[in-house]
Image 1 (cartoon, rainbow, N blue to C red):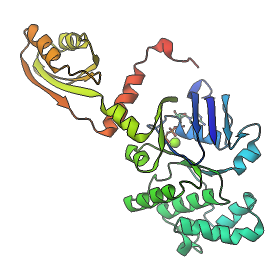
Image 2 (cartoon, protein in one colour; image 1 turned 135 degrees about the vertical axis):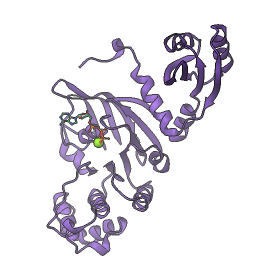
Image 3 (cartoon, protein in one colour; image 1 turned 90 degrees about the vertical axis):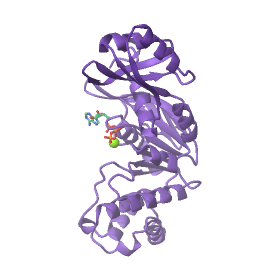
Image 4 (tube, protein in one colour; image 1 turned 180 degrees about the vertical axis):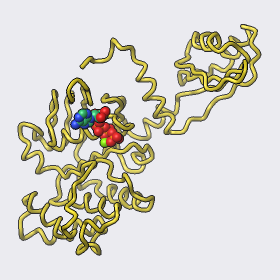
Amino acid sequence: MIEAHRLTKRFGFFTAIAEVSFRVDEGEIVGFLGPNGAGKSTTMRILGGVFPPTSGYARVAGHDVVLDSLRARQAIGYFPERIALYTDMTVREYLGYVADMKHVPAKQQKREIERVMDRCAVTHMAHRLIGTLSKGYRQRVGIAQALLGQPKVLILDEPTAGLDPEQVTEVRKLIRELRGHSTVILSTHILPEVEATCDRVLIINKGRLLAVDTPSNLNRRLRQLSQIHIEAQAPVVSLLEAVRQIDGVVRVEATHTDGNVVSVLVSTEPTKDLRSAIAERVVRQGWPLLEIRPVQLSLEEIFLELVHRRDQVPASQEVSP
Ligand SMILES: Nc1ncnc2c1ncn2[C@@H]1O[C@H](COP(=O)(O)OP(=O)(O)OP(=O)(O)O)[C@@H](O)[C@H]1O
Ligand SMILES: [Mg+2]
């Protein structure tokens, strides 16, 4: 239903996204996850027809978003990151205006507007001026306009940003209720959000897609990463170097130094328990080992770790702009 093929977008010399390819099947709810500036909105703007890619192509419901943009856009409900709502219109007037723009047949407009207002729980606000609504209600009106005309594909750019916890729960529920009716791609930088709502997740960082998987697989895969905390009395540079040389060590960083006591965080390959190897190496150098223990990672930390590890790809493997 959505097909992105090697999408690249440059702004001047800056590459916002590079070679981004993925598919979203009909009826799927897919989360687009990544830190600030990762390229989520850029990708979604290309899908939504806001601007074309520098290279690559995308199809939505079989229509190329550049070559056949009108038909592609007709298949899409788009909730942009910074939505411009007409503040001097009432909710109902605004939705009527959007329904016109989307060519919802006049006879069906009233019922369709009622339907999306009901879906987004804004019916009681129908006669309020948008300018007087709270942030959460504006967000709901924004989502309501995306739902108008029952588009096959919904592109929701951070639909829960700026909402209070109760509203977040409601929006997530709303998105889950779309399952089976629409194909959805939604962006977020909150990991539990994709776990709560999505069938699959795309992880993007610095314009590159890092992983595509189901939340549970990703969880399992990422959870296998092990970290070990050690504390030793040693010269910091020599200690880091000695630990780094151990087979199975992925990354070593000093987290704290206090006099000649150094704290070090060691990231290792998932399948290996390197505690004894590390202990042996440190002690063999004659450095007193004060502490060694495994570190439990939260999901957020695992995500950052994945992002971090990919950052260490040698420059020669990066595609230059
Ligand atoms: N019109 C533009 N001109 C120049 N640079 C841009 C433009 N739009 C986006 N960028 C840059 O492209 C990169 C990706 O931005 P994008 O908005 O896609 O990130 P994002 O993943 O949506 O981040 P956030 O989570 O903060 O919304 C950023 O470094 C941003 O500064
Ligand atoms: Mg964004």
